[in-house]
Length: 73
Ligand code: FES
Image (cartoon, rainbow, N blue to C red; front, side):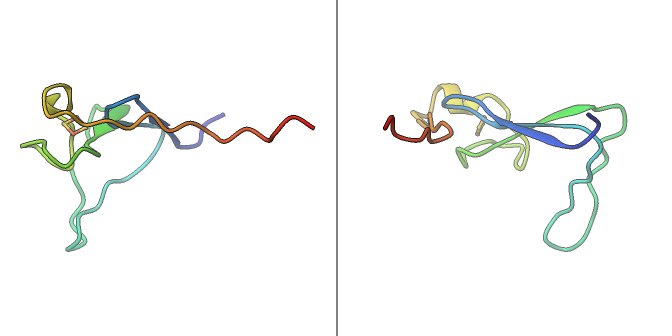
């Protein structure tokens, strides 16, 4: 499989892997040369947004969502 994969980390960033581009709100592309995996901040506290800088570990961010499973019949 060669598509983009976005994986949530419990109480942490979104890990993005695969062939992708990251574009800012002005249409400028981030230079991801040599990076096959990128961690995107979802706690909103990183000093390097949109990238994770590890601050989620100390800011109290909590997010442990999982894929909903169907109820057992
Ligand atoms: S998710 Fe890591 S700093 Fe925000």
